[in-house]
Image 1 (cartoon, rainbow, N blue to C red):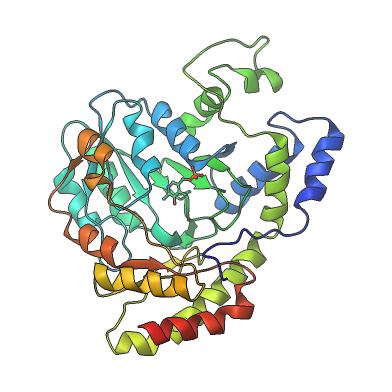
Image 2: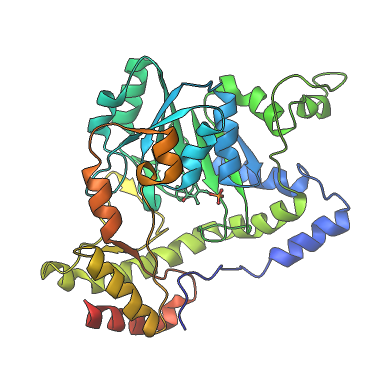
Length: 373
Ligand SMILES: *Cc1c(COP(=O)(O)O)cnc(C)c1O
């Protein structure tokens, strides 16, 4: 059986967790949390990185930070994970769904301006498969219309756009360390603050609406309830686990890219026979091999492909059900224009196994796939 995903462990996770245990500091914001956030700040070049217990939590923090109020509109693709929209709907925001590009499956930046109304507050740029959205255009639109840009870089750690790491370009960014992502802690995430005006308030929101972080740094002499907030910080045990992964982030990414490249080379001939389409990475983007997918001709072909792979013991999956067609998305959100590419591509996409250790059986996986196409 070759599963779709298998979380990779570097071997040092439990050693660091045992150190956190020995330190006797189990709540958040200890030594390991600091190591992880400094690493993110250095590698990504963001003003402040705050570990959270998920990317979902980081997106919720972003919605609180930018003061989303009922009726505010947030532009985003429909082809994304529920948390992209849910974080804003929780505050009464209205997701406005825009179609995706045929090549990257990212939001089609040429359709964003048509979706803007006087109620628009923000654009969420979801970097699908760790391949960047067209950020120069998106940032220029945002500036022209005085909107905020929040990067959902859940899949984008170690990727870049024109040399700039994903998550460092918008006003805010969000990462995920869920076990299905590249760098993992089981559940986990981070909020990346680029616009300095949000740095202090982000700490407060994450610490139950208190100015506890300022207090610990000696910047205020007592700590108290000063703003909205919740508990968004992970325990030191999670940060300790995550630190082992961050230390190996370069080699993890390199090895994933090798697997990705092997798929890509092997499916070239099948693509030329027009049986499938392979992922497209624009020249301005360096990706992190978060995902390898194929686009099959239609829904029927995809369904039979996934069934055939299952029979051979190979786990392949599809996602997403476009949010505009979901019960919650149709109730709380609205579409801007027709989402033609979203509908088409979401029926065609299938994700192949991609995890460290797959190298040994990848040739066999590819053989089975090509035989089925
Ligand atoms: C995984 C993912 C999320 C959610 O991440 P969690 O850490 O599981 O909350 C959000 N957006 C996108 C695009 C994702 O892929």
